[in-house]
Length: 313
Image: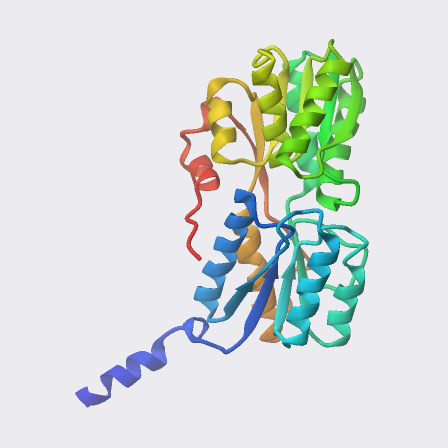
């Protein structure tokens, strides 16, 4: 009897931990930012847990729409079992998403939407609500009066457009004494965001606040404020996190950051495809959550987990 014990134990192992031979492609908007590395870690964790192989590839820059289409096309030609995709542009990726559906390759969209219904699930922050969080924080900081500029990301990026709209709508409805002086795009590039921030500070010397709607735009705004000796004098509310942004938050250059949960996006995105391939019906929409982080919040365990996820691929 004893010689059969290893076989019995093997049969009792959870089925989800056994290799399935399935391959899920994960295609982010870009690869440079810590945000995408956290997505990768979450997707890899789900792959290990559910016994599927994760293939990771994305464009170097978040504005390379044609390169992202090419990457998805290549994965489809290899007949992967599912695709987890963060569309760089809400229109540019529609064709390849719908092609995947015709090929019976399920697609889950994460982070940013696309103008199609041909997907299994959409896993993302409620970005409009995230913009509202930033708008209310700015309204509180300025006590309902002032002049604010927005360093936006890119014209076709659904996720950041929603953040920017949530921010603007909140100021208009709840803090009508605060004027939006200008909005310019940093195109998800730190150097360009810095140049935009410099231009805004020159063109609008009376600015009292800046909202930066992603990691690169927040970095650019923070650098510009430090270079001009305006840290703490102009209120900066940013979006996303990185090591340098946390340091600037500690130093008071940044008042607060709206922080997403990219690790959860990667994990939940892979899980929706695993469920779909197993014949289960995953939720159509999963809100991965966002919280406002101020300097006094940095030592909270739940905040540390968001800011420092285990980057294991």
